[in-house]
Structure formats: C-alpha cells, structure tokens
Image 1 (cartoon, helix red, strand yellow):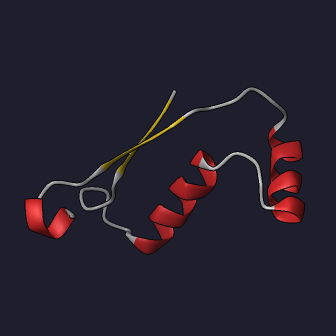
Image 2: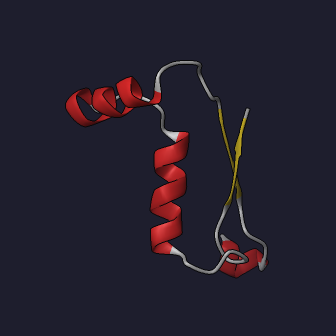
Length: 59
C-alpha cells in the first residue's frame, strides 16, 4: 500500500485501561491483550525508517 501511494498507512487501535504487566502476561500465555503497543514494537523492528513506517493511532 505504501509503495503504491507513496504515503505511509495509518493504523487505528483502542487502548483499554489496565495493568501493562497483566496485559503482557495475558498476551504471552493466552494470545490476547493489548495489541497496539506490541504492534508498534513489531513495526519499529520491521521498518527502522520513521517516515516509511505506518502511523499507529491509539485512542
């Protein structure tokens, strides 16, 4: 998508209240939890260039 439009895509997530450690444990053990911070970290690893990386919006 980015290569066709020359614009980085935007990704929108909800941010639920809760303990970050509990969310991490839940994600590791059961595969559920906060997706937004994990997605951001994966994107940072996959695309080191800030201008090419998708924009992650969390609200």
